[in-house]
Length: 312
Image (cartoon, rainbow, N blue to C red):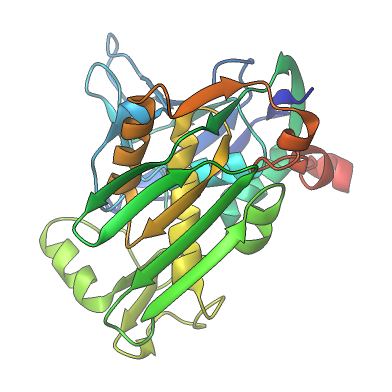
């Protein structure tokens, strides 16, 4: 029977918030079975609840980043890349301590977080791993944007985007994301935006920490960021990475097929709300060995993520 996991040791990461532009340090810590992923704000006054669970019912409908809030209204934002890295590395329980309201953007992908988890290592816990099995299709829409979950015997994703800039244009991709596939296919793909969007966001007091080094910035047919693209279809890969991180807010690995068309953070948050509002559409199960092998992050803790001391 598959077991829950956590980090073997703490790992520290420092960077800048994408939207706040503020420096922030994050410490990833081990956590006991059944705790899930919990953010802990270290910069709040005594008497304020500093803990923010990474769950779907704590998500705010934010279009530019995934933002969570606790019952006291304390928030943490831009959690999606870290959440994607944790689920991709098969980490089910962790305490994320940070000194600010926003997780650092780093290079705009999940790769630096994967390396931090690699440094920490992972260990199994003496507790069974549950999964969320999709039983019936659930779909939400916003104009031409669609997000949908369907029954599937593993975890898979189909995504399509359409942007006017020729550097992005129309892209689509379908992947089976069980096992280490997220690490291999998606983890290094960076957030992206149009140059016009940068100017608009900054006029709104957002993207204050954005640079050409932590996002792929395009204008028409040109990629303005140094070094160009990591993949010809990096944009759609990154949208899939975001969806992996947002779906991690379900609180357990999903057995299902996610389809996104022009969808983003807010629509995926609405999709999880619609799913859990329909008790006939899902069930929590102890996966069979065959099902467990097809979950995102399955086997990664043993096969791909080792503490630095063991790799030396």
